[in-house]
Image 1 (cartoon, rainbow over the protein chains, first blue to last red):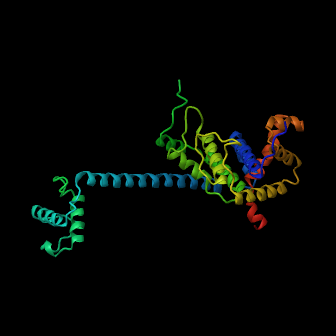
Image 2: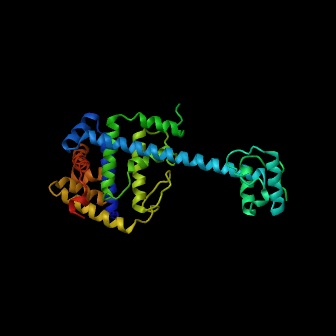
Image 3: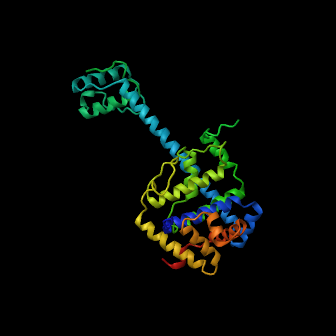
Length: 146
Length: 178
């Protein structure tokens, strides 16, 4: 039964696969002859291969870094969610912040409470400050305050 | 006894890459060039992509079953196929004519042009053209030998001429000014 002729792409694929098989099979001496006969600059070829290796390592490292960052973010979010959920009532939130500031007079970096009079803070600011305190682990033991 | 099903860790892949000799790196780069040119120089760095997939475990190397270089060449083969089809193929899946994804139309045209340019370059080498004709008819090396009355060694000599030419293959797109 005659086989269906291959497409141009399939023929090219077959050709380069034959080339790959051939290049894998030749010994180092034959490879050197082949490179010389083909007029290929060996040092340039070597540099090209090394560049590909470096690019692969860089891609792999970048992917690992990204995965670690993502895992850390997920773990942080999960920890915050596990630790504490802010009360939905705005008055309770304000009271919570007031209590936290009273308990922690030397709040660390990341929490900006220039206005010691917390009544001057907007509701949004109160929420933001509370979220920072939760992130810092300064609130959380109380559980859900709702 | 070696466990032929054991998969290398990312560290083992790194060690294998670091252990590549300069001659092996050249072989890899040469195959990368041939593959890229067979795609009309449109593809990504197939060597880097194949190594990356081995490093991140998307392609699993079984060190007790296959050498690192043949393994990477196999990955390059499937990456090339994917590029042509515009889709990622499951690394461990066997791809045949039935399961292969449909090709991308633009790349099909590039393949036709690239093959034509390639055949023009072999216009003076009748035997290589016969070899390509055998590939076109999806014939195995043994069948081509039988049909052309070649010994295996003669077949390999012709194939070597094709390799030598394709290894030094200049970009067809630049040559034709396309």
